[in-house]
Length: 108
Image (cartoon, rainbow, N blue to C red):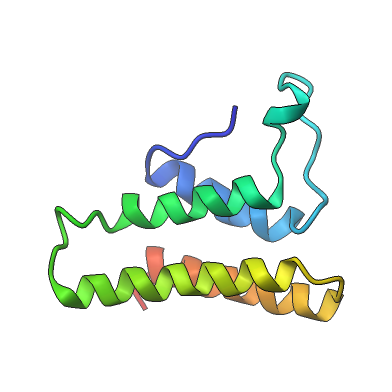
């Protein structure tokens, strides 16, 4: 089962989604079909990762709310682009995942 519980999970999920989205996820033989990774599950977990990286109780100020919103917006747009059938849009979606990674782990 794929999980998102800590920063290590988030650190691993970003490149996984970068490499395999929108629909090239490896089949994990130890998981049932309904527990296999897919675009919806992966992005749901990335959204959870925002709350893990910047928990509102630890970062309650408005500036952090703005950063969380920006991160969620990046993920939403990346997801939207991956849902298209256009490989050029998929490349843009990957660039957004890279931006997301930079903002979370390098604070830019």
